[in-house]
Length: 137
Image 1 (tube, rainbow, N blue to C red):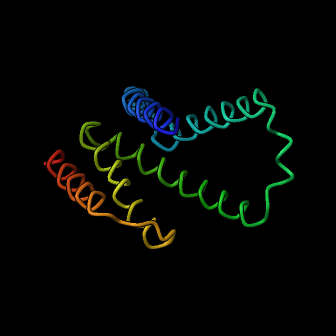
Image 2 (cartoon, rainbow, N blue to C red):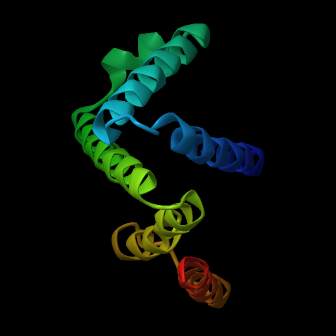
Image 3 (tube, rainbow, N blue to C red):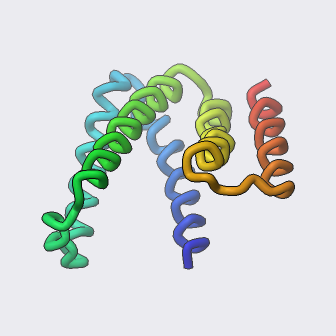
């Protein structure tokens, strides 16, 4: 089931890039990011209330709060940079560089989460790296 959600995430991310590229034309990229963020916040809370999971809010521990806030800050920084790059460059070049985060995530997961890097993952990392640079040339 995780694969289905990951695949849907990929589809929506692709749509996000194309819709954003069209939407930011003539709009300040920071303003566009703020508008997008408000929509995401509203959508996320609608899902929380639709699934009746809001009662779990008091159960979130201190460590989780800290890391969720840090993750939110990283997301915000990523979106601000992404929209600026998308406004300045071609979507077909910006998106592959943005998705290079796959390689960085595997490396960070190895360093901080102690996840294994197998030969298959290493080959995948090398292919993604080569593909990313090949696509932006």
